Length: 226
Image (cartoon, rainbow, N blue to C red; front, side, top):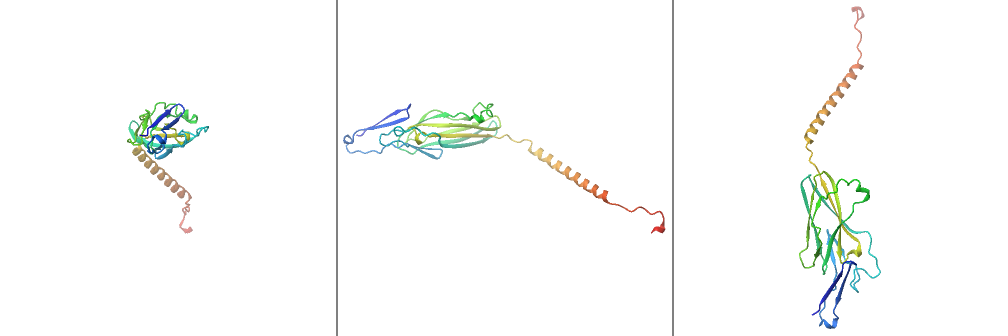
């Protein structure tokens, strides 16, 4: 029986597969391992070398930049919880190891978010394995903030074997904490009264201007003038 031996080098990002010689397999054939992971609805495929089963072709540096960047939105009142779900679907034929890494806030926004150090997003940040035959892992996400406003975090999914030739696979969590407008009805009432007052004053001033322009004849002193 053919045996498939798998060795993983986490430090280099290489995922090597070694097979027994075909003569010892008694005619058995297996498909080559093809890692593929669907992340937030987008497919991240393995772009390595199929000859030696390395993550990247020899002497090929990893790609820089972002390969996949999805955004998940939340909206809740301050103090309430909004939930969502992120699904990792293994669409290849070999296991994929994954872990999470939080990305730093952009320097252009760090001064705006300095007072929001505390995270408002909660999910299982543990590393895991996504197997082709097993149930696809679903990661529950929760958002809760006691302060009204916009809150964001960016996370990168690191995989072994490396997908997309080393390009980054990211998800941005964006939560809106919207406070309830408790004075909306009172404000509308005041606006209506102010509008009515302004209209009355405007009409009164127009009438005064019209009256000022009306000229009457002086009253005659005797009947002869008629």
